[in-house]
Figure 1 (cartoon, rainbow, N blue to C red):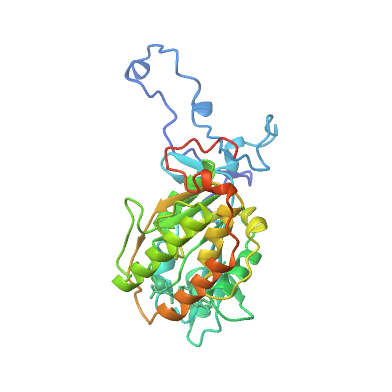
Figure 2: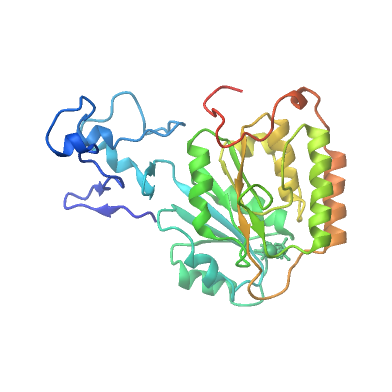
Length: 319
Ligand SMILES: Nc1nc2c(ncn2[C@@H]2O[C@H](COP(=O)(O)OP(=O)(O)OP(=O)(O)O)[C@@H](O)[C@H]2O)c(=O)[nH]1
Ligand SMILES: [Mg+2]
């Protein structure tokens, strides 16, 4: 996947997604401003987290730009992005989900939860290169653990298959990660986020559980049980996921804080599930989330430092 076209010599040819010519009025008129640089270097963007392909001296026989994938009008990245989609009987929703996925992602992993409809067939039709993983056990947590294990990208994005998540937001998550965050955590209640899907009772439950996590683990989250998140693969080593159900997002959110990883919340809008019924049962799954919060050991050390960095924070500093 990815939007790289092959050039005549067989190498990837990626044009910078940004203007490379003179950018000031004086320069456009041919006068020197002392800030021109050359077109190539002015379009060279280096991610905050250097991938293996970046070194101080680029290989001489390759075009350095070719390693970058443009992901927006002003950002290109090198790390491959995997999208992991847990899906159980979501055949009718998948066309909506896949329609919003950006073309520059490296791969899609669909984790099928023993669907009895055409989920797998539809996924293969819509995204021929999709990797389908049949989960062995049961539950969303179990599905995500299998999906993360199968992902080959350096960045992993988790997206629900019910049509509630907009794939166009992936660029915001990835931008936060290449700017220095370890974990980009979707939030429906951060400024700019929203939800069409949550009932008042679920909002209240989520708020209480979120407040509990903030108090116990020194986090400053505005949302807790949300399935749209992205992270660098190395986070998996720190969070060692071991749960089966809908408590999975809570467990991830707690363990990234406990590990001292840099978490940035991304405002996200959750749309209504398009077709079918929710698999979540508010009381049963709320209690599972509560159990996870009580079971995980709190940590005093982290109470003094913010667990969510504002977008303007200098994410480049060490922790
Ligand atoms: N593979 C797999 N996917 C699951 C399982 N349970 C839920 N999912 C998927 O996880 C995603 C979230 O599940 P939903 O049923 O939408 O739950 P929810 O988003 O918390 O609840 P709503 O807000 O009511 O939609 C969907 O894409 C489901 O298909 C499971 O056991 N296995
Ligand atoms: Mg849903």
